[in-house]
Amino acid sequence: MRLPLSFNNHSLPERVYRWFSWAGAYAPLLMLFFAILLVGSLSRALLVAWQFDRVAETSVWPGIFLHGLRADLIMAGMAVAPLVLFLPILGHRFSWTVWKRLTGLRNFRHCTIKSLCKNDCVLLIW
Image (cartoon, rainbow, N blue to C red; front, side):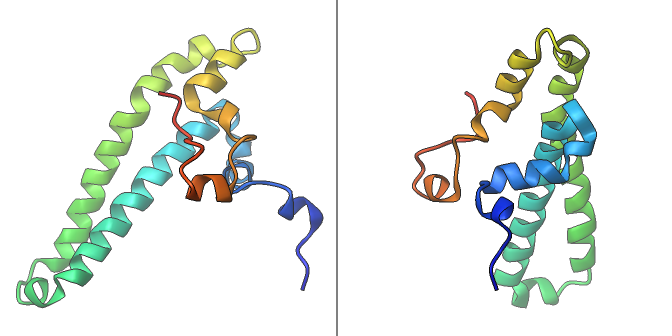
């Protein structure tokens, strides 16, 4: 089965951005927020799976995920908070290019899955 042409022509970050495009200028912030949650939860699940024989002996292993989610929400909020404070200043048409550069939107066109795997293209500006 062949994928639609529009699906093949876009990189992974562009496709993810389309899911959040309803949020307007907040889209890159939501992407960052959910990426932090995903990476934190996935790494915690892998660590628990790795040490499951030790974790299963305790009765607190469900709390690991609950408190880990809490810590991930705090970390994601801390990462997004400075950008949210700049949004009223930079999120309009006169300074949209600065906002795109600050949040990494300008790199979406240049990054593809192949270049991300080769570490040629980094989504972060800094």
